[in-house]
Length: 256
Ligand code: SAH
Image (cartoon, rainbow, N blue to C red; front, side, top):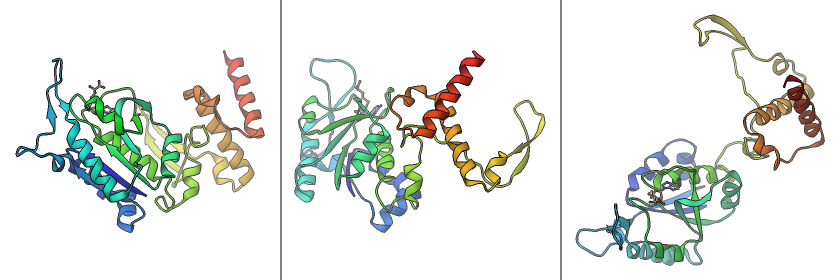
């Protein structure tokens, strides 16, 4: 997969991408990320990328012409039509479903805003506008990294074990079940300063795979029910899960 990112702070994108799973994917060539400095597409001596808003008001607006030139250059290199994603708090909320969908594309472009955002006319070349949540950041670089990271996990060969991606939280509309690793017992001081022994749930060390599977389903469901009941409406549940959910709901009713 090829990704072109347009920003006025290339280092904010390049440095995080040097480490971890994405860094390795880029090194191996599974992922090809090219960062474009918007200032390279200005034509004035001072390489100005922003200007005051027409009509007055606070802050600066990203000038449209450097962005159009950057997109022209990318189109000349990669071909058209381009999938151009504008990072914007006014966009549709980015979800795991979007991540999976975008991972199926061979090439995407991401535009990172700054200041008060983009000149409205840039939207003429934008195919989708994505927000990473209902809060406002100082720039689109962190959102672009968030989107890229989530998308890249679905690109075959990026994450070592593709099965782990399919089982992740949200992928089936449920939160993940709890995970444990060695040691089986650990002595820790809890929040109240009291020493306690914390053990891994016995079922996980039982070797009974059918029981483990059922326990995990039950935990995933009860967690989702407690923390994100909104997810359950759209979740794709098998028969066993539907039954488990009915039991869990019944139990919580009895407690009420
Ligand atoms: N004045 C604008 C906000 C500008 S924030 C408004 O009210 O809509 C500056 C830039 O940061 C935006 O252009 C966008 O690229 C990025 N940004 C900020 N918050 C974001 C979010 N929640 N999701 C995606 N991008 C965001």
